[in-house]
Amino acid sequence: MNRLSSQISGRPLYIQIITMYVPAWGYGGPVRLFFDYARWLAGEFDVAVFTSDARHDLSRLSRTEVIDGVPVSRHRLWLRKLAAKSIHLLSPSLLLEGIRRIRASTGVVIIHISELRGAVPLYAVLLKRLFRRRTILVHSAFGSLHYKASLRRRIYDKVFTKLLFNAVDLRLAQNDHEKAVYSEWCRQYGISAQANIRLFPLHLDGMAAGCGRLGAAGKNRQMVAEVRMQYGVPQDARVFIFLGRLHVAKGILRAIDVFLEFARRVEPNSMLLIVGADYGFQQSVERYILERNAGERVRVVNNVYETRFDYYFLADVFLGFPTIFEETMLSSVEAMGCGTPIIVSREADAPFVEEEGAGHVIDFDVNTAVEAMAAVVRQLPDYEVRAHATAARHFSGASAAPALLALLREAAASHSDAGRGVAEVNEHLSTR
Image (cartoon, rainbow, N blue to C red; front, side, top):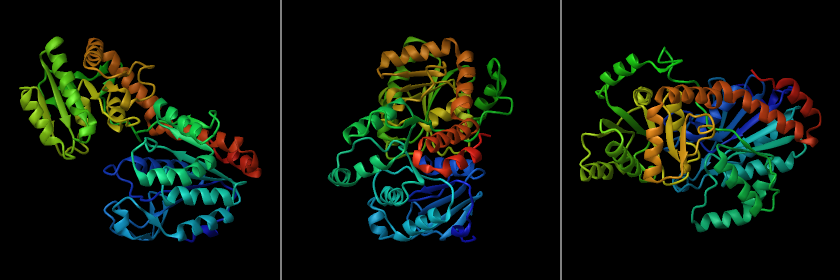
């Protein structure tokens, strides 16, 4: 790869700083989303990703590479034994390369991070302080704001987190709950309640339910029947699905309770599919199913990857009732992309769902969930059409890319010290 610091242009510079960067569905989360952001912006910005040379299993990677047009510069991760305890010591060479790139750029510079603690936010704050007149610092929370009891975190927050919150110019939240949490953090650190907190939901880069599976009247029932036959799912059953990690915090036992009550009160000929990978909770789930004598109605399915979209499609309704805040479950968005309406608890809140009739977001209790399920199945084709339309309108890469560009343009325009860089951003940031 050519030495990027020598590439001087008037275009804006977009820098991502992230501890580990191996974009793949299996890792999910911030890495996958940041990779999409970088690809979208590469046509309008000079893009640079600064990260460590470690995979999530802490094996080493090559120092530089280009992934689908995104240049990635990797720097040494020190003391990997500490990294196994979530203490990531990134080489100062990462900070030095950031300084070189910003000094070489003649346009406005946007620095984007998603981490709340550790070396990454500290490096970002240092760059912001060194180049305050030219840089815009953007922070995406991705569910990182929730309080967890930890002496180490309390000490870090008291010493460093206020510095980050005062340095950030634009805060991106995935849903209304995360916006509220951002606002509370800002209040605690004496930052105006009018801090620049904007809604930018989690996205899918493309809808997975094409090829004639959906039409103006909802799902193609013949195709649903074919997919159900392929996976051994009864043709005439009302099918509900949970898809995700088989983990205690995912509320799987809640979903079983709700489903069984729905089957008892509303529609006996129903099935619940629990689809995912075991994170130490599958035995508890299977034991609970046996205790409830639900073995014929509740099925656990493992080892699903690309075929997850078939499971979303063959189901009638997606259920998600986690016991911890998830700030929009990716699986619920994927389900809507396949035309499957969702019913989720407030902990998994997805914006636009209730406003646009794509499903229900509820304060969880069994009766409320059963009533929502009954309401959806009574008008299922209408919900299917609205679910797919909502996913395409708000959660697809095609809609998220111009929305991100618009947010960055707005941030640059409001950054009064950016000077000539503002004009450059307005010239080069055009929505596609």
